[in-house]
Image (cartoon, rainbow, N blue to C red):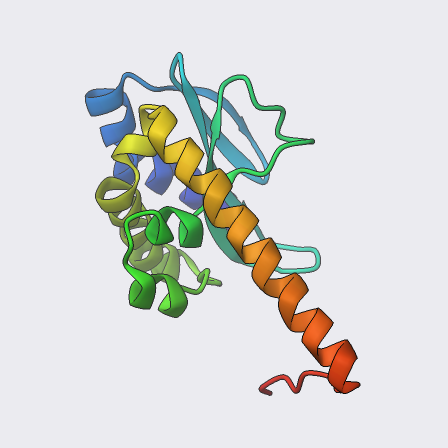
Length: 161
């Protein structure tokens, strides 16, 4: 069995709660995505074995009316931030499972994150999407302010290696 086939098998197993609890259906299985949709939102679970970020495992949620090519989806970190769990959001990093065994460890974790932090987003709660817009606007202001201060000081931020 290929890694992609194992990924699809495990997604169907660990994300079955989307179908059972939230009335989602799988609408497409085509590398690198498994897409679920309800009448209000879509979930895309991502795994790609090649490319710029090989073996990255991730997921995002979009409203049904959002075009995935032009809108920003709610990613895992933002989902966690919306719950005000700042420490968890800062610590989250997308996993890069390179084997079937690692997929078997990481996919249940990703499903648990969605179960814990995603119900309001999965139901397209308008308050959550409003908070998301404010969160994004605040992050943009913060980045712009830091850039303005750095230009004023003529300094370049140092990045951790």
